[in-house]
Structures are given as C-alpha cells and as structure tokens.
Length: 172
Image (cartoon, rainbow, N blue to C red; front, side):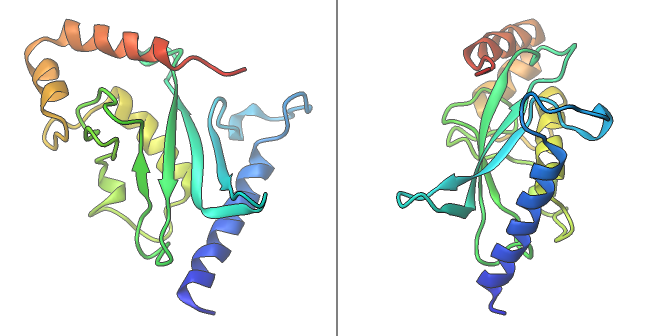
C-alpha cells in the first residue's frame, strides 16, 4: 500500500472511531463519560459530494469554568500523504487571539511538533488544543500581541478571550 493509501486508511479508521463515539443528536446515550461533548471532527466534502479525508473541519469547545467557556472554535486539520508519520497542520481562523496561535491561524503545540508520535489520534489532538486554550505556553509564543497582553495585563487578556468566545457561539 502506498504511503497516501496508508494515510487515507488511517484517517478512515479515525473517522469510523469518531463516529462510533459521537452518536447522532437525539440518540440515546448510555455513557457520556467516553463522549467529547461539543467537539466536532468530520472530513470536508469535495465538490462531487465525496469525502476528503485529507482535510477535516473540527470544532473545539471552550472548557466549562474557563474564560473560553461558551465558545465553539473552528479548527481545520490538514493531513498530508505522510500521515501518521507527520502530524497534521492545525489552524484556527486568521488572527485568532491566543499566545500559541500564529496570525495565520496555525497552532503551535508540542504534540504537533517535536512531541508528535504516529499513535496520536484526532481525538487527542483536539483535546490537546482545548487544553492549550486555557493553558497557553508563554515559553513558545506564536503571536507577539497576544503574548504581550498575556505577560503584561492578564485581566485584559482574559477580557479578550471572553470577547472572542462570544464571537464563536454554538451552532445548535
């Protein structure tokens, strides 16, 4: 099997696992402990209606009890034919306000770089991004403005985070 086939095979398995752990809205849920409530991860659709396993449209909810609560943040995962040997590129919308998100929207997260392992799943990536929202890594800033506000004026940083969360409400 070619490497692209391996990437698509792995992504097809990830999609299957994700769908199994996220029943349709209105379905009876016997155990919520294994569900990632508020998270969305699904491959994009191609113009012909087929699934594009190499590009996933995701949503990461802000954690309850944090300044990010109430926000449902869009993230795209771009996979290459070398996945899972190489991590996907993960992007928020441009100019997303966060210490570890570049102005381009690219996420700076250890598990997407030096700490990457082929065993890391889409589920783990999204959980890692959710954790990063509330716990930025100031030792690895990606955005000067957000870093400066974080380092010099925490109340203003938190205000901007809450404001941003309001710009990304739930779609349901």
